[in-house]
Length: 317
Ligand code: RIB
Image (cartoon, rainbow, N blue to C red; front, side, top):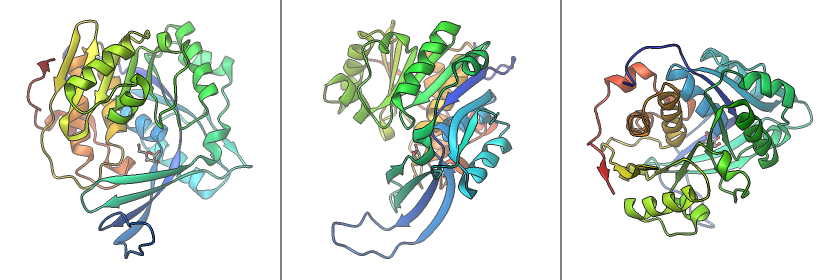
């Protein structure tokens, strides 16, 4: 299927974190003991769960988010930001005993970032099995990351599997994945560091990524995508491995590039298109994301992605 063709919007459920990003722009990351004058500081909606939900919504999916915020102004601001993108927030709980999640994001002049996450209310996410089963009915994908408790992610993955809903897992920040969970994953999206940790292999090239992807597929997951930053991405499935290069763009801020990629990939797959079409659209979406500052404000709409330049063709590995 052509990702540009129109059909009923796919339904996607995201289980994930909501963070208010405290973004500090700096010339370079300070060394130990160094005091540095920064350029600016802003509070910007983020969190891997929120960003991935926004990316899916801006790519045209009907999205609902399962998460938790504190009873504070940041929680309300994050909820409102999601609603502005048409995301169903009825499963975003409010827990008055914890502050809304916060991320300290330091962005260097090169656009590279360093992030510290304080989980806050994200650590209080608790799945309501009955409500989740109803929500997963007729849903193409459950998307989850590891910024919410892994036991709750495992429960949601099991529920999705039972409901016939495919699971797209982004195990970030990386932690070991239980043996029983691997076969529940339809699509695993990891960066080089995550691929290396989960496969136990060094990942320094597209060929290394292909081998790491194959070894993770051997654990039961159907498809693996390894994102490689400026070197593009590697897609691995039953047909083998392919390297998708990216186009060089002026990098302003890489925050949420992976989340943007993942949303575009998920919506393309949910629409019935191939893994390679999804990866290609994801690369175009991420390339636009990194030309803008911040997490959620930098995530492009589908119309902008479809107008953007095509990356070079993929090559088999
Ligand atoms: O993936 C980027 C996100 O990671 C940021 O928005 C930050 O909140 C952390 O969760």
